[in-house]
Length: 85
Ligand code: SF4
Image (cartoon, rainbow, N blue to C red; front, side, top):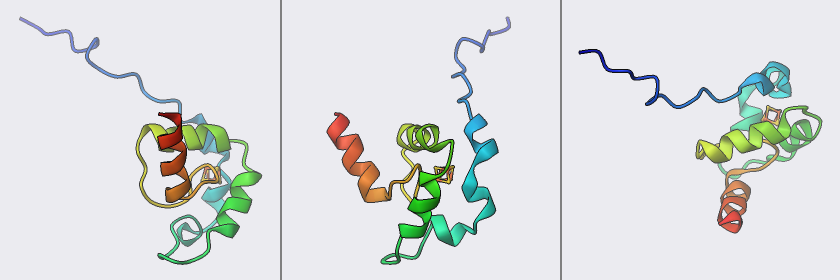
């Protein structure tokens, strides 16, 4: 007997925002700075990125713990998530 696993598979998330991700042109140290380092430059780049909102929602949905995503640091994403309830 074959099992239909299609109903058990979660839909693939839309990752098209990555195609225009400005961070792809910057080094990873920008977005994953050493503890205590500034995230200002990464956030500035995010501010000009077309995919910022989708990137942030992806990070929140996937509980990304490290680095700057969608213009927010780890702490800022944690606070946003907590405030959303
Ligand atoms: S919002 Fe920032 S982290 Fe997200 S894809 Fe754009 S540049 Fe990269």
